[in-house]
Amino acid sequence: MSRARLTRAVEFPAGHRYVLPGRSEEASRRRFGTSATPHGHHWRCEVTVAGRIDEETGMVVDLAELDRLLEDRVREPMDHAFLNDLPEFEDGGLPTTEALARVVWDRIRPDLPDGCELVKVRVREDRDLWSEYRGE
Image 1 (cartoon, rainbow, N blue to C red):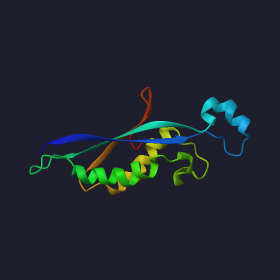
Image 2 (cartoon, rainbow, N blue to C red):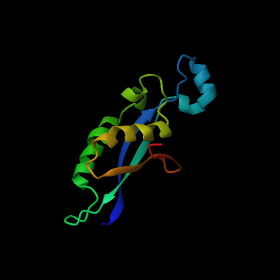
Image 3 (tube, one colour):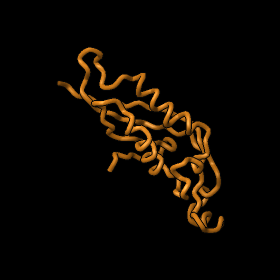
Image 4 (spheres, one colour):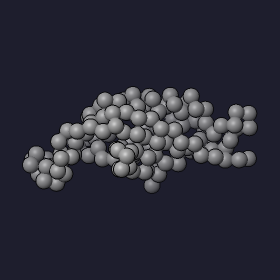
């Protein structure tokens, strides 16, 4: 039976800042420069899944089901959000592009349909900066 990969993207504007937990604002500014100041980006999150191509539908995954999952777990809770306030960063973790890719992975992987494997999550902070996470 044939296998394939499928990538779906969602976009959302959101803000964040880098702050060193337990350190002064000045220490954060010295370490992260302008990224220590609240600022926003138009994020693009690309999720790649793999699986067997269903002979009846010709699909790896029901696209409507994948879209609902991405809407519920990624786009809706992150749209116009301040990413530092997400539960995953409550402990003072920094909402970097790399960390956000891992957060997306953790949020969607458990609820993918049977037979659908999450291959990678790519998060683009802007056109020249992105991170990929593959569950490693």
